[in-house]
Length: 348
Ligand code: SF4
Image (cartoon, rainbow, N blue to C red; front, side, top):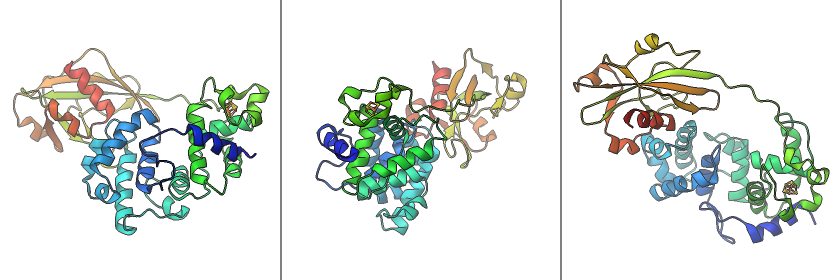
């Protein structure tokens, strides 16, 4: 019996029920396949579930998503992080709706040319949505393959060997089920700590398990230490509690999202005088106790928070690109998690 047939037999009995997954015997719809794969990048299944349902309820087709204003998509995405994905999601929906009549292309080159679709996502769409024998290797699958073949060289150097081994296992029949079976195995059985080898359909073939090193794999090269940047966030409240927000530039980190204005984020100690000089408007700024901490892909952020009360509406006019938002309407704005933390810190 091949690895693939063992895995498919296991999948037929133990497949997870997921909101974006077609039921056995049903043809998968590429739209939810693509949407879920984009949402699942860097995010867990548990977190994605509610977001996915909300997106599908609000935009049931890719044409509907393409027709939505970008701001609506960004605010529906708020909290999922990595906001460039949301902008690319929207751009991709537009290309698929406008150029491909709402139907995803099926070949690798055309999929890779779409915004936000890299090698992994293209392979996942080809396999799951179109049942093509494409090899989709994410972190979970890397772990399974490294253990199955006892690949001891560390990541990222081991990526090519893992990808080659993974591709050789993909069956020509039921490639979509096989891709999802691999994902399920990595998520529920071959988990990072304490892999559940006794219930694993691949246990008799697993070299990592027989050498007693499975749990230590995959090995990883030591990570570079992330730098810490620091800044001062300015929470300006109106008498009715509304807070001054501004829109970030459309390119770069958190591009196009709303934010509480802040000084530049710099490495090294926060220089309060310098930071206060970057306040969006002149006011009696009071620096609050405590810090707001957040971690991005490439750096940690520590924000001190300054608060002031606006005595006149006109203050907002001094700061171009800003607007007022009352607390009960914050959920409608495209506020990234770090900015929600800043507001919570300032109004507690
Ligand atoms: Fe992972 Fe254990 Fe299965 Fe090997 S036997 S693939 S280590 S769960």
